Image 1 (cartoon, rainbow, N blue to C red):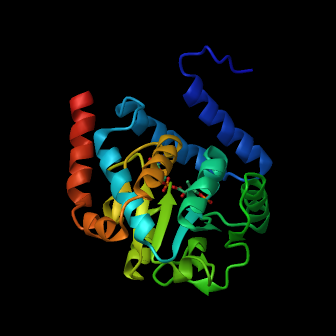
Image 2 (image 1 turned 90 degrees about the vertical axis):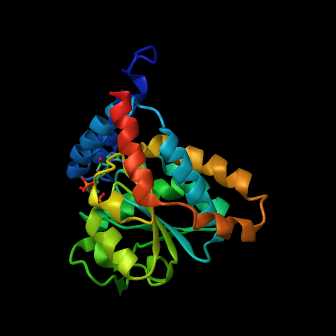
Length: 243
Ligand code: PTJ
């Protein structure tokens, strides 16, 4: 039993969620390793949201609010780390929730769909994906015809760079959450939020609720001012300054 008074309670709780998620059949064993790499970067960030992530979150909220067919891509890590928040995010934008797995099995898809539904999702896409995303050979190429296949903006987290590139090549805009500002995903996405998914999604929810009251035309003009490459460089500077 993890005592709430433990100074690293939040971090240890995230680990527990993932190991529980693995035992339940949602999270891939490799997902635990991927999380460990993220933890190392989170440590370098001082386990708090950097200023650069706040700028990226603001730009992401603007992009999602102006999207015509946004989709939130869910994998075995995000499904257990922040399922309720992902459902809430999807409701704010009228975005579809689509399961997209690197280590795809029917059983994992079933368990993840159940988790999302238990957390309020009315419809889950990607359960029987019929379309294929060009440019990748992994299981991530399987996409829902009505979901990622038709999306103009795709929200991804804990992702491999190949699919982000394939989504960009398919003329979609990609919002990535990745603690590693040096990853291929981070460098390839339209907007990269360098932060822990468990902090980034609630902040994105808050920013979106606030911006929802703003005129859409103003939002569209705001998007063009965000420079992802510069923001990533600034993220690295923030890490170095922190060190
Ligand atoms: O559930 P599946 O089958 O789709 O598999 C998912 C994993 C995570 C196993 C797969 O996508 C994978 O191997 O990912 P990578 O290539 O290791 O990339 C994961 C990235 O996410 C790394 O750059 C990590 O630093 C980052 N990361 C890890 N934990 C977090 C994170 N970013 C944000 N928040 C986290 N909590």
